[in-house]
Length: 93
Image 1: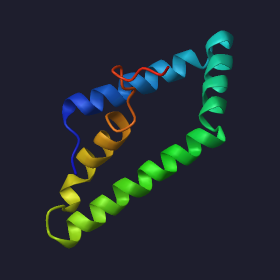
Image 2: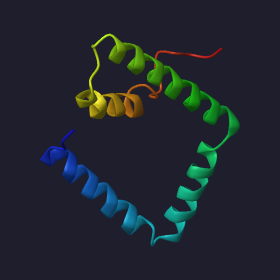
Image 3: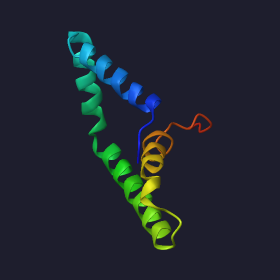
Image 4: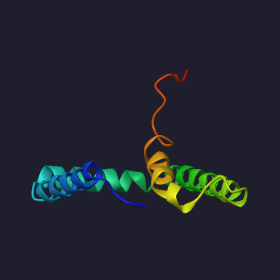
């Protein structure tokens, strides 16, 4: 599992932005609120179930030779990026 230059640059820029934002009181307090909101019981249960489902799928695929360790980065990016995204087509009544 290797990172390409684009991924390394994105990690560096995100780290710089978080570092700079940590010095602004308004942003820091908002960030603390966002982190606190993430640790609500319903969100933790949803994320845990999704992680368990992805783990089960990866295990089953690896048992059948269809998933290898080289797929870890792609699996993590998919799980963190696309699996948990908001569905714009869903409308609640």
